[in-house]
Image (cartoon, rainbow, N blue to C red; front, top):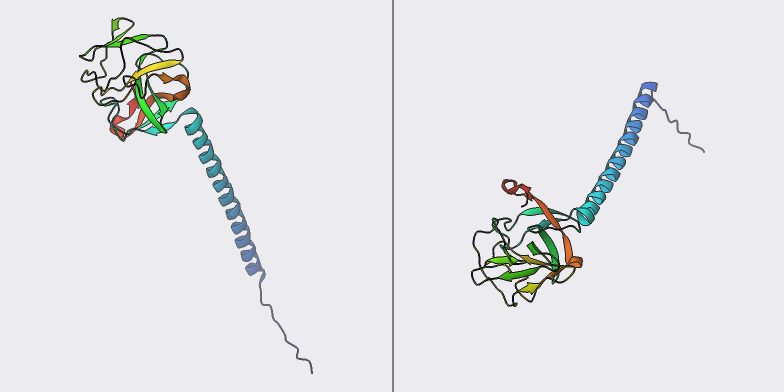
Length: 195
């Protein structure tokens, strides 16, 4: 004997319309969600490329650049090949990135006296960015001629800075340079162009 089951479908046209609206909304929501996620991923990738290749962002460690830059400052640098006296740049040294100021350009002659006065090509350097002159950790002989394609660099806190005055670092080659520091973005009380 066969059992016959009656299935009754009591679905109204309004319920079908409501269900269709919910499905369309769900589909539209998923499309918007996917496109938003894709846009965020593309934006993050573009920002990472810009931050790595064009405008590297760095955090300052140590006190060798005080009073210009302080430990913890977050700075933006720009990739460039044009540097001038007094510019602050960052460069690779022993798997670290150091930040120093350009004192001597290629083929310049740099001298320091025992009081910490700096002479470039025989002229006393005006250095309003330092608080105190110091010979610091110096183990090179002066006068020092800067090699072609290199820069003589020093930190602004002359007493503690490890820089071109020390033979361990010496003059910085053009191919070691990451970029020129252009401004500080954090903390806000240090926000602005770096001089």
